[in-house]
Length: 207
Ligand code: B12
Image 1 (tube, rainbow, N blue to C red):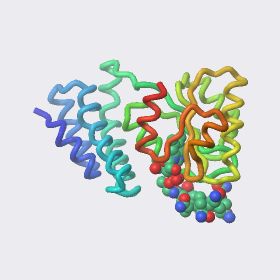
Image 2 (cartoon, helix red, strand yellow):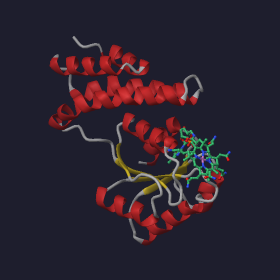
Image 3 (cartoon, rainbow, N blue to C red):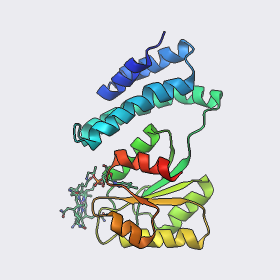
Image 4 (cartoon, protein in one colour):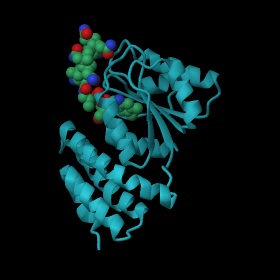
């Protein structure tokens, strides 16, 4: 019988091949897809998130674990669809206009996926209209923005204004090295978090 704790451990170690192999085996053993996702892949990613938050692992380890998670997800996806397991919600994620930094954004996206959210990544240098359009077409419940430059932070305010003007019902959250809670309060964002691991908890609390 498949050992989901061992699957989680392989993901924590970032062993992509083992994660793929064990995911396949768990499906073959008839383990419900939802259990493989929640008790194997998401459980492993949650550990990585906690360790990252506590500075026990670095960005590179998170990226390697996320790559292993992606490999497992690709195998599990058809079984999830078949079992009717839906993502918790859709989140639109992008780096605001004028800003090309995407390492942090991608990390947040990986943690979102690891937390069971569907991510619509609109990339970098994304103008307000692109956020609004993506939220509308994807039916997202959350809109997450990243900025790494003090000069592009004001773009976040523009995105929030555009979302309100278009009357799109999404919660907004922001992050990036220069962003603070007080800036989030100032521009009317629904939430802010300082790192990718807390971003998942924040997203879930906003839903
Ligand atoms: C890598 C880097 C680049 C790379 C980007 C490559 C890429 N694909 O991203 C390149 C070389 C392209 C680059 C270019 C520039 N950069 Co640069 N860059 C950096 C650097 C060294 C690291 C950023 C990074 O990836 N950090 C690692 C990630 C994991 O951390 P993070 O992004 O902060 O993300 C975490 C959190 O902030 C949070 N988070 C991030 N996004 C989100 C979103 C949400 C919703 C949430 C909840 C959380 C969240 O979670 C993440 C994980 O925990 C920083 C210095 C630094 N120490 O930050 C400078 C830095 C950001 N860059 C800077 C500058 C000035 C520039 C340039 C203007 C340089 C130039 N003169 O051309 C250009 C601007 C280009 C542009 N238009 O965007 C300055 C910004 C100064 C300022 N206060 O505005 C910095 C701070 C360097 C410095 N000390 O001067 N840069």
